[in-house]
Length: 220
Image 1 (tube, rainbow, N blue to C red):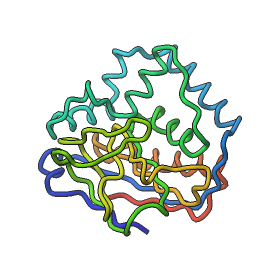
Image 2 (cartoon, one colour):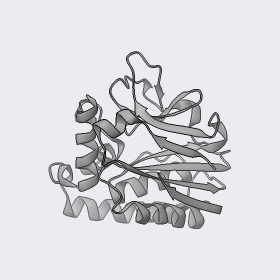
Image 3 (cartoon, rainbow, N blue to C red):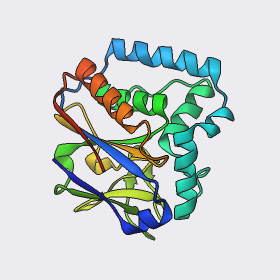
Image 4 (cartoon, rainbow, N blue to C red):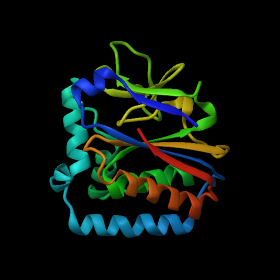
């Protein structure tokens, strides 16, 4: 079990933040056809009902953007992942197919609007994690993005440094085909409403598509 706390600097900038964590033992695969059928169904629905303008009004996305501004970061230059995923689909592009764990976390993020960190729990250093704000010149290698400027950005840190922001997670703790334990952190910048549903959805998908066992979730 991990102990996850919220720093005083985040509480001062964005006191309504609430988070939920999901921890599970899993078996990853390169591809899950039924999962991608769910993703295709969601994509069709999103494109029929939303626009790149309307998604700006989705509660979780709005709150995450405003939290960025409160911390001093421009959310239009460094988009939160949930917004970026929806924008990609609405531009007529398809999601990148990575592996089952990454793909299902992306689906939960798309459905809920929450930016979600998905980590290989065995790569996390220590058991204490803290949500803080990125510092000037703080080293952070985003997954597939290279060096990411996380100054003034909310960041989850373990004992060795940053592992996740709402824009991108770190290469050091990313999930892969050999991942056996997943830690998912669901960031509720809009508050606690809906977080438990998102955690339940994550566990359900993990059980159906990643043979998840020993699943637990908790608020922080």
